[in-house]
Length: 402
Image (cartoon, rainbow, N blue to C red; front, side):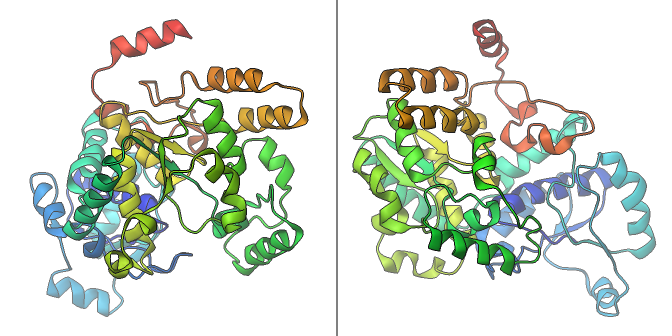
């Protein structure tokens, strides 16, 4: 049994890992339980977001998946005779074979109560890496209701020409958690600080926003994003679909982006309120809609490298390396500050931004491996190399260009 933690895409990656682990150990997996206690407090069950029958049948030849425990084992759980634990993060598959399998043999049921980033990115058997992809790109299909609404949003966008999806991570919770307050007034800074202290499990409390921003660890602000897109020569007539929750600071903070790109849209402006009624207060189902639109966009631009940004990046690589602009935030804020201070002309600024991102468009590339520092290496789901179309030729030519 597994209980996922985090938002939709953190849970998505965890589900892929848990299927791979169950297959390697040759044990039965119970349909994963989704997080209902995180910041978003989404009550959705697995079957509210994913097509559970497709999930089970499409993996039938790999792993046995049940919707619930058989009655005799359910009784054991009710009596408290179940072993519950969080696995060690970034563990090699041998950890599960050597440490977890004996516990399953002993207790019959083991409950893994945290599943984020519990399987290492690299060094795993090729069969497991390919299975992680199979789950992600084939077995995890959204419900027909979500898929149908996603298709409708994409059709509405396509009717008006090409579109870019901007994953603008500038919601209140993101800013409070990260401590990034660039462009916020004193009242907003105080409000964000209060929110950070209100959540005891957010460990970092005292944060130097300016320092963090200069290190490239803050999401780009809407103003910084407008300058970046313009510098990259993104056509002002492009539709920009905002894949995000409510932007902190509202219209005031979105003003410069709206001036530069008048065709700003989001699911709430494209659809009728009645279309979204069933999705309200279900943040993971709303995120699933944004995920589908992000996959289909002509260009995908995340302003922060969170779970959605990474998982969508990897999925777009799988879809024949669709254009994904991976922003170098550290370099960008330095260039933006120089431009705003007048030490760089617009042409110099634009040229530097283009040069910085010439090879950051979701092209074929090697996943970085950093032994003993798995948190710092490239995430498997952002670049699942083992499952991608052959790209030796593209990769070699790109390396030669470097």
